[in-house]
Length: 258
Image 1 (spheres, helix red, strand yellow):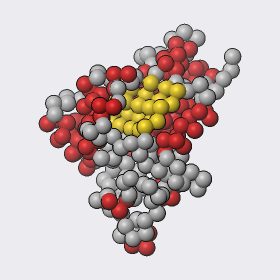
Image 2 (cartoon, rainbow, N blue to C red):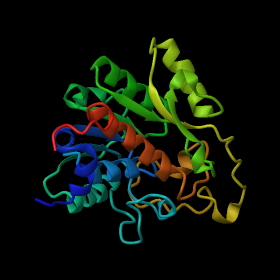
Image 3 (cartoon, rainbow, N blue to C red):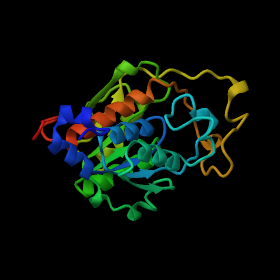
Image 4 (cartoon, rainbow, N blue to C red):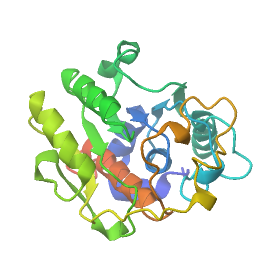
């Protein structure tokens, strides 16, 4: 019988579609990268999600985030993303967590129940904790390195963290993970040299904050506010989703039974 995933099944086969439907993927960070990860996974037939993010959609998110429109500004990102998933697949199970993941609340997340973990957050402390917890639970994890201040979407690559270069965030992560005994980690990273954002006070979040009321972590509290564009974080997110789908299916798109 035809359904919304029939074209995907022509590539993957019925066995692999069942594997995706049975998978539970936790995505940490539902922003410019993470939103596209979830979108692609939902459209690929993943059946269960855990969405973790404490942010609300901001006016300045509209330039790059798939969940951001004038109608969704001020709404929690995880709420908007859940609605999108269920519009794609009403049978999906979606758990939302309106929090910022930190070592202090890490114990609230049962990593051993997840089929795959996607790290799409932008702070080193949270990234390290996510990776360490996933590794301890022996759950596959993939991490996104820096996608801000970039213009060349074709520069993204998939590699082990210790084979990355150019990316400033990857450099920090290599050092921190090595110190913690992590021997390998699949990442998506860009070899493009970051662009220096223009200093324009007329559009500065520090001078003209437009964060929605009740926002826990305002841009004014960030050390740096990176520049961004629609076609870079989206590509990173789609690459991440592709790796998850390949890893969850047999023999990287092995067809299984038809």
